[in-house]
Amino acid sequence: MTIQEAQTQIDNWIKTIGVRYFSELTNMAILTEEVGELARIMARKYGDQSFKESDKQKDLADEMADVLWVLICLANQTGVNLTEALEKNFEKKNLRDADRHKNNEKLR
Image 1: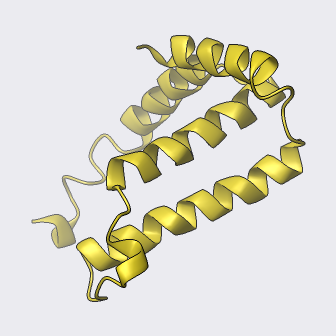
Image 2 (image 1 turned 120 degrees about the vertical axis):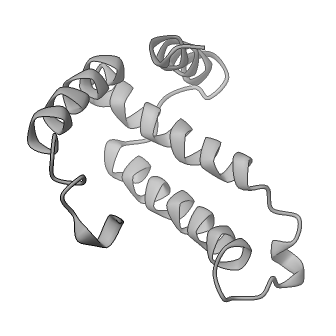
């Protein structure tokens, strides 16, 4: 699935099953919540925190997909083509960071 296909499929789902988009501000709050859930799993799986019983059933991939879903909702609501945005972001990073990371002593 391409990013554009994901944007289209989510838009179709929202308009048929989800009824309508939540407001942009509500979706921003939901995105923050979903990122927090992802962070919780990351902290337990790769960090120093131990898993609580309630966290053991959580799936890292599912939490990442939740973040992506809400981000795509926000893009759809605000008219952002994420494919174009990502392509422009690569261009920016390729120009700005062409040698930056290679010259970073911390990354060696």
